[in-house]
Image (cartoon, rainbow, N blue to C red; front, top):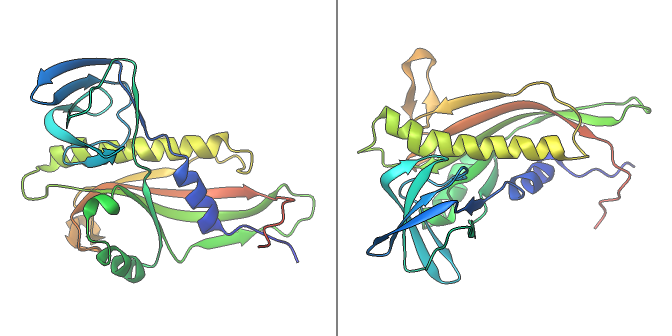
Length: 236
């Protein structure tokens, strides 16, 4: 019997390779432990986000935030020009909406579950049964790159700049990882769909019912992903 790595595991490995580094091009000490950073790639960072590196806390502030250009970080760390900050990896979930909602409810702190990449199941794998084809299967994927928002205070434009654009950064980096991989075949297109106040899309009415309890915005990726055959054995 052929040994195959399951699609959900392959996707998870690619999620873990998304570039989560913040390179400090220039920096200004604003005082009071605040640092104005200029960077061409702010990754998935967004206002409200807090993270910890080596027991030191960092918080992204709303002031001066422009994705892929500038942001203010509050931290007791001493930051320097030319430094690269490695951010926490994106969280990865896969499953049905109900199962994933229950899983998220068990996680107490938002920092431990967002930003996240959610692979919606059930997913469809179309297997190629031609022996001389390099493609093992084509998987239709619906994935959501989502992060928490300040829904009470952000307007639509702020949802776009503070959540959707950072999540598009993560989506583009995920696609770049697919493009570079020797186990992925060529795909000619993919679809990215913005979701402000992520919920259930009721035709032209927008999102009228929340899927998860958390207040989220982000972007959806739809892609037919060709996965190549492998000679490796994935037996445990």
